[in-house]
Image 1 (cartoon, rainbow, N blue to C red):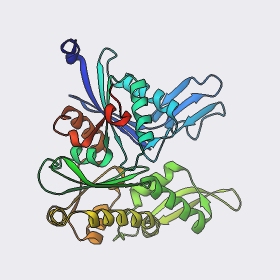
Image 2 (image 1 turned 180 degrees about the vertical axis):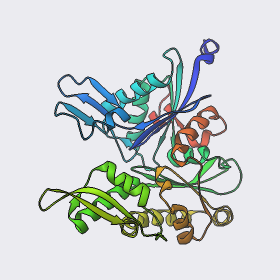
Image 3 (image 1 turned 120 degrees about the vertical axis):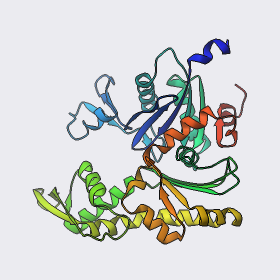
Image 4 (image 1 turned 90 degrees about the vertical axis):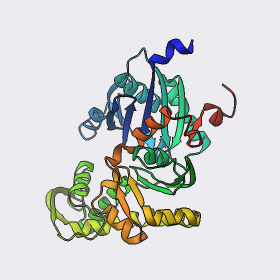
Length: 346
């Protein structure tokens, strides 16, 4: 029977992120990249919108619409919504007649219970086979790092809710760590700064635009102003405000220090011969957070090693998960299947 179904089997890699879910389909590449949000009708729990369409409803949805963010810190916080969202996404990406073999990236710190929840959600969404891989390992594969070679490869994946760091060599993980901190924390730091410095608040989209256009991980050479409409906390009135690039640099710096400390701790636990490889070959940054201006410069200055940002860093995890499942025999040390997660034979 296996030979009958094998031509219809489709390998799929999924980056189930706190902010964005991305899907890689074998032979097609990245076919979907949308916010990890779902909107339902409060009266009959019917799905109204998923992904970008649901995100557009965030600030304009009526009271009868519930907005769900089912993923927190890279793991499932609402199993039912995640299962429904995954089913919707897979139906959108592949034909119903195809047999799905799915690989999902999970944080290094995910517990066995959290991994089982991901497995169950993937099976319930229609997968015939499901596998898990650490997010940083998937990012390294997606960034075309030589993970098979007998050299140290270090990757730092800065996602929306989690930062994952791994040292890989000879197709396996030597050291890996994760922290519940990512680009959402950068937004939160900016929001707190506006609240205390200007006694004003603004919407999430404005803060995200502010971070992208004027945010920087290093002190900017040109101190540019970003003008926006904010609501005063004292009188509740709308007013135009301006925040400088240097101010955003200082605000974002606090969460960046925590990420750098975690990178240093991984380097301290790395065997000396592999640490020497990092001094020579450097560190690769992936994830949406790596796109913050000057991120590679900051890491290079603070760690004293070469640092580069991967091409299309925000797509590395999904692409790597898709490549890993196609090469699962040679990458078995990085992959966790159902037998390992459930500790029983299927």
